[in-house]
Length: 284
Image (cartoon, rainbow, N blue to C red; front, top):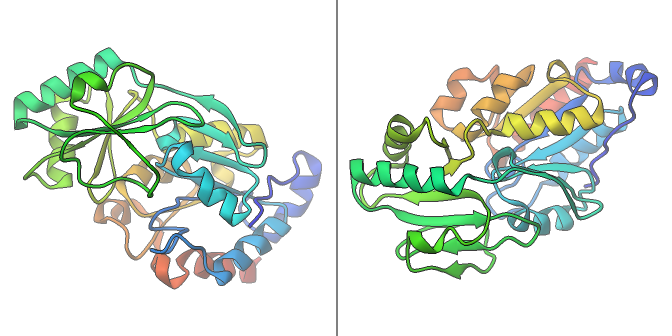
């Protein structure tokens, strides 16, 4: 699946009438990818038909680049990808990191202390910055994105030796929604807080979201929020939906995202992206 960045200027404007949007932004897990981390032939064909009109397709994922790039390579994806909840803009075709935002480690440490003062000890992991940034995993942390190797750590003191994109937190008894709500209440003035999937509550640079990285990538392509349709499934897609002209939640999406979506499509296992893109192409 090659990602067409599309032409800019008059040539893009001349072809855009064949599809109502100039940019299609898709989350990966639970959205573009099925549970086996593949993309169906139907969805590939729908995206190819859209990019053939001159529109662009950008993948926007919570995964950092090291946990994303093997998937992009397997897909034959060569365009821009927004990774790390918006922290990284990555050129997949050139295997090059274009922008990167890191977490203020002093603020992150203070945020962790505030959260633990409220709910007790947390289970921790973290994503280091860079094309080859390792994922650090503390004792008891239960789940990770993808299946790449990780670096075990003994505790929070081992997190801070190198720049981080984000810190992952889990709690032995609180649900993801409960933990995210507490983290936002007691530490939301220090760090960003988002939930990206089951067992994945993240602390991010303050003000960072998928919309941050997507707006940077869109600017590089010469397209605007008003030209964008976005697909997602989790609360970390809320800001992206707020930024885009049209937000489409998958049938398997979190209720918070469905509540603000412009429409709800079929699940990621049932070609939900293709269902919408085929309809829009037929109406063009």
